[in-house]
Image (cartoon, rainbow over all chains, first blue to last red; front, side, top):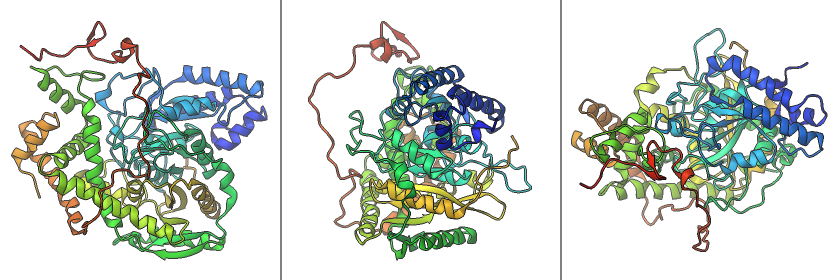
Length: 494
Length: 95
């Protein structure tokens, strides 16, 4: 029998309908693959085999009765940020030690409603703060990709590094992920997978551990554009429990995949041509432009003048919101408690021990920019700059641009324990330079694998869309995927 | 703008994160590197620009002020490190 884990989500779903194999067999194949690979890749922080096989059996019964949902019997990995009832949910942090929620997040509820099977919880940067998946309390995730002729370990990107690594290494058919500044799109680009951050408000944030509430959005990482479209449809939808959830019908995203780009106007923002950008990123971007042009799109140079201010504004807004959201971890309600001589001592010791270095650093920054005397100079100014960033995009779209093409990341995956990045937090933050504008403006963005660098590592392109027009991103993303026509499966070494 | 050692300690107290004496210098360097990075925002002319309060043009939904959930204190405290009779237990606050 063919290796069931190598099937795309769409092909696996069809195989289940055709009775080529059962959901139990499919789930079993994935559980075996996880057992073999996880000691090396560290993509999962908790595997739930009993629950997975129970869910698969239920799916087999539904399929036999001809009642399969859109994801019936499809084994998924879930980022540790999503609350899953009775199952490890710790945002990969020490401070949430032992936390098992009494409730289920809306996004995962939607997936189970549609028949999906949970394989386990995926590693991530602690509280989704990081671009390399090295800030996890559970240790770094390893990228299944390696440079040609090298055994050096590479990062899968972050914060959804476990999701990206697991999808790329055939340890789940697709995964949930979240994106606050690039945490879906950057790891997707680093692992040759497809990741989409939908429009803010498309997926409910209810039951997703909060980082920066005005920026956080859930989305899928998958192996193909079509698979990502199928996943996003199930994850999306109005939810009264999230006050920023948008009450809009969810389109059949998969139906838009084959639509093509004929007649569309694609904007190329000159401000994304950064100083010191590697020639291969520049060449990949140009290649993407040619592919879209060849399929009938009109290419137009555009200007998004406030682009360079998105990352600095983000490093005020996101830590500020985080310092407020993470105030709840106090050693009283859940997780770790370190006893002290009085209650303040207990709070301070618990939070110093429970949060890792990157989280503490951001909470300190956030606390500072919100403190008396600095609020206007930092936070209010950053929110004004954010208005200008969003306005740049609005003007481009009002001028007839349908979507915007940019590189996804400034480089391919880098090494685990990279000295430059670890010595300078700002250098690590620059990973998100092309993706963070999209969060600041609440827009949808997709990363699609489009080429490889000189050492054979995957590189991605990003498409940015109008609010709630993910369909155009799937259509244009598919054009790039097809034109690239490359095999984005890593050579197996694990 | 940059922070001095006293400010680092003050931020630590506000954030309820213990900053040990030997950690102050490291925090100070990192915080100042980030503050140096965000300083470029001062170049932007923000005269007359409204600060963003909602990224999507929508009003927060309202609902009637009714109890819609609850009645299960044992679930609320189920993950707490220390409880008694469905109360969270903390060190003595009032002498």
